[in-house]
Length: 222
Image (cartoon, rainbow, N blue to C red; front, side):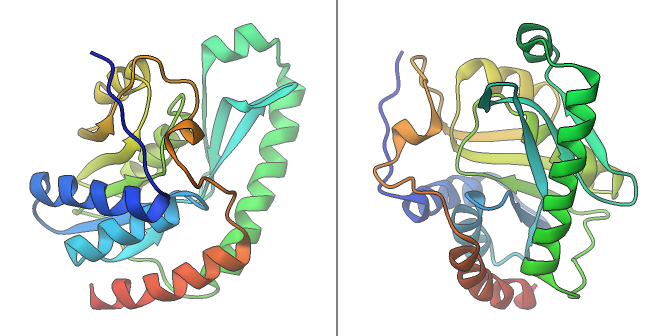
């Protein structure tokens, strides 16, 4: 059955997603927003759970000539990790040089965002806790996969993905890789995440920083 759903904006999606997560998740948790679009969604989830909020700093590598299609995703850390969508790699004809060049560029952007958004503040330790990765939606799941791999490497006991909307095929694949996936809608006629939002403007650094000021108060309570 085709599910019809729409959100006013990311905050609205976050509030609705928070109710679902609150009903299904128990125990000590940390909520991880995928910047920038996942920040307002994750703030609502963290507020509802009374949980600390941090960022999962992951960057998508777009396919050559089609940057909206996720070819791969990279995450920073002591040992930067990358996950490649093999079917997109084959279809796009991307070369190894292209991947290495784009990965280096995106890792530099991750470092910039960490300095900008987090400064020198220590991140909460996910070891032994449930990590909930939150975004405003997904198309392929590459970004979520690399975030989950990074959190497992850091000792998270469970990794849950919580999102408002995604295509059924992506959700099916992710359910086999993560401990749990919570998704409000899996429309069979999925075209893009933006289709399900009335307001889906690209967040600026200034907007993200303003939201994270609020997020810090939530994190401090944890």
